[in-house]
Image (cartoon, rainbow, N blue to C red; front, side):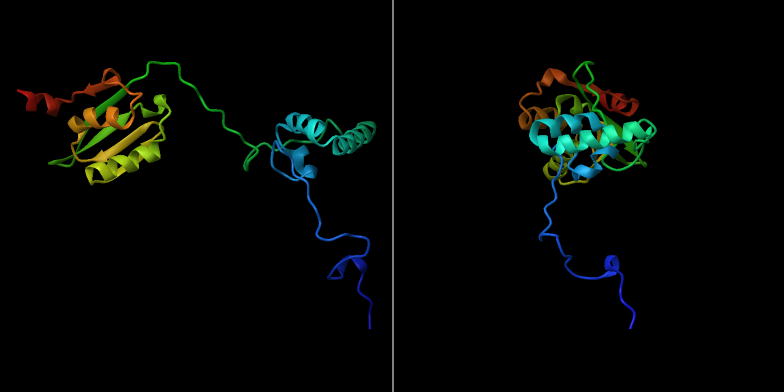
Length: 186
């Protein structure tokens, strides 16, 4: 019978204490040995230095040994995909206002479009669900800062939005009148 190589044997290995304890980085939430592939590796090193100084010393020694070999600067960082790509949130300093408009959908049906809720830091999914329940209709987030509500509920929104979110005054609500709305006003 042939003997199985040590690395292919199944089961616990000698000299290893179980369960194996893995330490995770507080910055990138990855195991410590994977921090070097994270785009913000410098922040990981700062966190390591502050919270796990013994592990930081090991990392520092490994980098010095790699630097002597000349491989340190040639290592490529992760460029795409995964948690590594952090999207920066854009803060728009523009005017805070919510626009309400009515858009035709077919011959007789219409939808109400609400834009600008994101400037007040309101979660659009929660707002869409609220509108759908309040008006007993379909409501969805369609764009970056746009909610479409099925049906013509524009007039009701002028009362509902300030009631639900007190930080939004009625002065911030703007009515975009379409051609069809102008004919109805006459």
